[in-house]
Amino acid sequence: MTTQPPTAMPVETVALEMDQLHVLNRFYKRNGHKGKARPGDHAFVLHLNGQVLAGVRFEVMAEGWLMRGLWVHRNWRGQGLGRQLLQGCEVQWSAQPCYCYPYRELAAFYTRIGFVAVEEHVAPRLQTLLSRYRRRGEDVGLMRFSGLVRSTDYTDSIDSQPLSS
Image 1: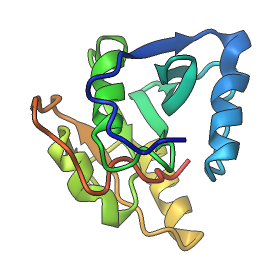
Image 2: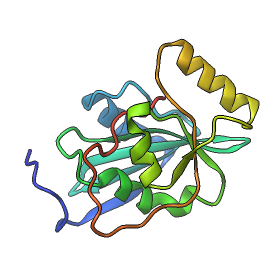
Image 3: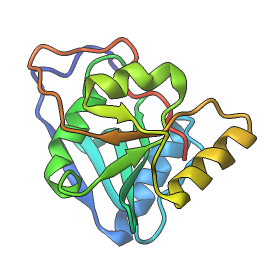
C-alpha cells in the first residue's frame, strides 16, 4: 500500500449500520487496536475506494457521547485523517456533550481538534471509568469536546494514535 498523502483523493466518511460493525472491528484488529465496536455503538469509517483508512465509535451515555477507538491505519497516520473523520461525522455527535479518554501523549492532538481537559466536576460514571483506566496503568486523561477547530492546511505528526477503550 502506498503512503502518499490522500489529499487529492476522494475520501468519504461512512456511518456503519449495526450489521456492519464487523468492518470496523476487522480494521481495528488489522491495525493493532484492542477495542471492539459493540451493538449500540455509533460507528464511522473514513473510506478511500472501499479501503478503511480510519475509524471511530461513539457510545451513548446519560452524559452524552463517549468517543472510543479513534484509530488511523498505520500507513496513513500523521496526515490529518483522524481530524477529517471527526469532521465528516461531526453532525452526528457534536450536538450533545462528547467525552474521550486519550493517552496523555495525545492530549495536544485532542486539544487542537477542540477537546478540553475536564477531570473535575464530571459525572460519577466518567470519573469511575477514568479511575479504572488509571488503576490498569493507563496514562489517560478525560477530555470534553468544546467545538471542532477547523483548518484547511492542518496535518499532525501524531494523528490519531490509540485512544483508550
